[in-house]
Amino acid sequence: MAVITVLRMGDARLWEVSKPVTKFDSPELHSLLHDMRDTMQAMNGAGLAAPQIGVGLRVVIFGVQSNSRYPDADSVPETVLINPVITAVNDLTDEAWEGCLSVPGLRGVVERYSHIRYQGYDEYGALIDRTVSGFHARVVQHECDHLDGILYPMRIQDMTQFGYTAELFPDADIQDD
Ligand code: NI
Image (cartoon, rainbow, N blue to C red):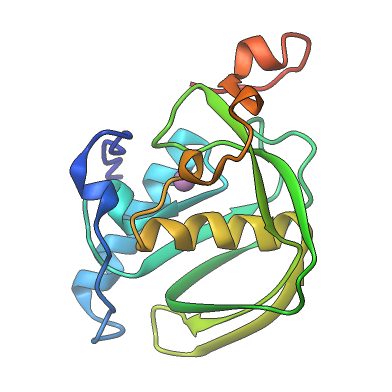
């Protein structure tokens, strides 16, 4: 098991635009995904982007069954998404609290498209093409933002809706570190 230290906001590598993957089903790509899965699991994340472990490639993973960081979240299938393209289905948006393993202990309200289509590839080069909404759509938008050097605090419109999880939700049983 290779759990990699997740880079935290302030590390300049998180601001970089990541490069597309050009070779699928390679030992390097499988090894990267192994590390990403181990790291996401160890940190109890809903998703993880390769640049968060210092690898500047357009690779994200996500998936939620039950998660103590997001106790009320809908389930999202375990997915490897490479070279993703996101298209908003319409102009509808919604606001919800987000957290990020690179911004530990904090949450903020972010506006995202409610309905998106996302396309990309899995680690074997098979096409992925899904149209999703709600928390699933939010997770994908959040993770793919990492590939363009964007962290969710950069999208917060009302800074009073940004703070420490323990202060914002003192009565909730949210594990966040
Ligand atoms: Ni994140």
